Each structure stands twice: as C-alpha cells, then as structure tokens.
Length: 357
Image (cartoon, helix red, strand yellow):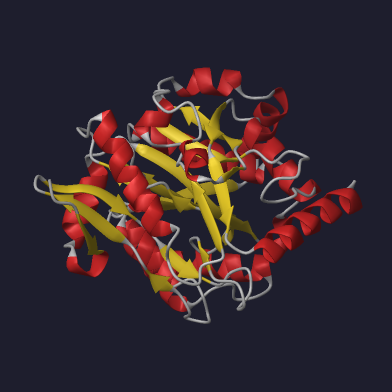
C-alpha cells in the first residue's frame, strides 16, 4: 500500500477539521482554527507551518499539526505552538495496531528530520476521548525518544447536576461563590447567538490593562472573535454595576470545553469571590448547554519539569482544584537536537528551582 505525505496547504481545511471531529484522538488544538491562531501569535511573524496529512490508498489516515517558531529566542528554532506544546498526531480510528505503529514511526521520523529544528515540544491533549476513557494510559512520546515531562490537569465531569457539583467544591470556594452572589456582580455569556464586537473589545481591553502591555498582534484577537461566531468558543464577562471587570475565554469542541484564558482589571484582582463566581457561571452555562467535560487548567507543583512553577502558578492551580474536578494525566514530552542548549535549559531550570526554594 502506497503512503504519501501531503502538505496542509494542499488539503481542504474542511476535510482536515471533519477528520478531527470524527476522531477519538483529536482536540481543538489539532484543527486549522488553532493552527491559524498560532501562526498569528508572534509580532516577529517568523513562524512556518509544516503541518501535513498522511494518505494511503484508503484516503486520509493521519493529520500532523506542526508549527516552527522561535519562542525560546531567535537563535533557537523549535516545534511548538506559541510556546504551547504541539498536539500528538491524530490517526484515523479504524487503523489497526501494527499499521498504526508503522504510520506513527513514519510521522516522527519525518518530524525529527525537519531541518535546523533544535527543540520539539509535544503533548497528548487530555480532552481527547482516548484519554478520558483511559484508552491511553502511558506516554506515547517516550517511544520516539522524547523526555517525559508529564504532569496532570483538572477536568470537571459535567454528568452531574449543579447542586452536586457545588456540594463537591471546596468549602472555601462555596463560601466565596455565596459571598459573590450577594454582591452586585453579574455575568454575561457571549456566544454566536448574541455576539457583540464591542463586548469582545471589552475582553481585549481588560486583558491589555491586566498584562500592562499588548501581548500579541491584533490578528490573533480577530481570530478568537471568529471562533465565537463559529461556535468554537464563548466569552464570559463579569460586570460590577456598569463596569466590565474580568473575563474568561473558553474553547469548545466535540462537547468538551477548555478554559483558554482569563483576565481581571488590576484594581479588582483581590475582590473576594469574583473569579470563583465567574467560573461557577461558566460551569452552569456548560451544564445548560449539555457539554460533557470542562478542563479548568494544568496542575503546577513545586517540581523541575518543562517549567519551574512559582508561587503564583501554584496558587492558580490551587484555585482551580477547588471546583471539584478530577486530575487527569497530561502526557508531555520534549526532544533536544542541540546538546549545549539542552544542558543550558536543564541548568537554568535547576537554578530557578533552588533560587525559588
């Protein structure tokens, strides 16, 4: 059987995205929507799209999202997505084990032979069916020479009523939500049915004021707005009296949701219960809309991994852990082609860990 590699620019994007929708191994970060966003995240405009599909006599058997960029510095070329790990390639559900191994080997031999790439950053998205159903229980990246940097993530199952979810929350979270309910906070959910560019602009404004700088090009914000209009995301905005003060942006795909980003105006960041209430209303919206899972975010512990989590990151993890979500594996891996860079990277992480400690 003949096997061909076809660049993404020669594949119909609707065919690519349908392949994702029909797969037990695909998540939103595999789609052309996320690839387009990643290609427009850098002010340097120095990214290259190496993504491709694998075809045999039966048609499309695998898709491989790949972006080359320089997040780690202009002198280091890497495969990642705006610094975020690249999702593991997706193979068609009906591929048999022996053929699957052959295709995977072909794919990773091809990935690791891309010219002048010195660092490869990959993960297996926790919201794919094969992780949620425990079909995948080990890190597939290690068999291709990747160093295992796996952690975990918080995923809330939405097969319960809101009352049960509330009861399972940490006591302090319930108290903060009840406190916020007595205040003059209101939450607005913006989706494709009520999209307003002016409200989306409020989110961008809050993000800018919270970050104290413009973190990415305007094109990336326009892409995010298009996701809302195409039922791939929604936006939750907190309002205090007549002022919008915080926001949560959530990706949705195949009846699952992921908390992508959020921001709060600096003067409101210490307001009790504000972001607890915002997440609670996001959860209620997901329940009402019949979503099955909600990934709140990665678990940051005091360890040396691809990152060394500071107190802020650990506190964010603790905040997310209080909503009663379960910990699911987040399989990750990194691969170095540059020995001096690998030594420098590990030394910097160790130094950061001991300095922090």
